[in-house]
Image 1 (cartoon, rainbow, N blue to C red):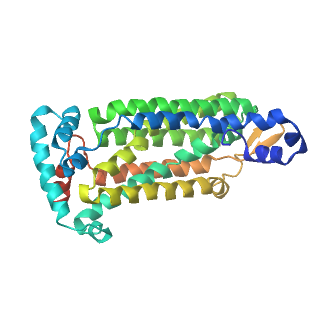
Image 2 (cartoon, one colour):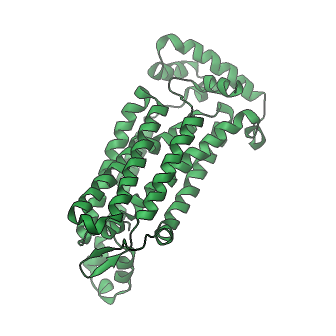
Image 3 (cartoon, rainbow, N blue to C red):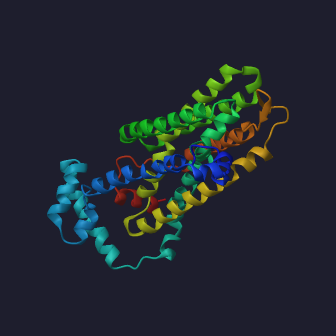
Length: 329
């Protein structure tokens, strides 16, 4: 449904000709059948995912635990890691864990980080582009709906490619550095995108293609950094005994922020509209989202400041080592 204008789709549903033509009824269903493919890939892939070493050790399956650790850790550190995990598992068995435990002073910072990194992940406005890109490209002056849809397909391709690149980089250059590279690129791209929308009428055809380039750059910098990093960081910053609770709060936060950003996008466009910048296409004018993108760029800049002050580097650290750092403040 995100591939077409909501108004056009709704109008199509209400028309008698739509329901009278079986070919039109069939065409949109493939969009939903396509979702079966990644679901099957995930189902098959999960069959090859090993249990976590800590869970195996907690069940007394030492050999399997060692086998998994040997795949992901240097051989000379495996015995030390098993010893640390045994100590932590024994502690967990002797102490009840609940929401009150998560509110201890030494855990407030990781809890704040889990919520805030998801705030910046969503409030740089990425899902407005993912959800509404055909509408945004039509606002930019693309007269053909088909052209807007193909540009949207390009955004999906860029998102996938740069997420894969992020997998390669995250353990090579570290979380913090990748975060700053990504947020800097997002801020630059989205502010340039805002400027292109402001001067769209003066730039003409060149401006439309500049918008596409900066939109692709915006998505690429997100996909290489804070997109996957948000999920990775919340899985690393909590100690084992509250990891489930902590990551659940981070996951809840991301979907709350996602809803807010998605439902407010067009309201923000109206509220931050810049008089005299309506985009003229032929005989019609369209809304200009420049103010909304400027707001998202400003939030990206705030994200850089927040990351400098609070985001830890967790590259190469075990959960036990990260926990000790929190306990030592």
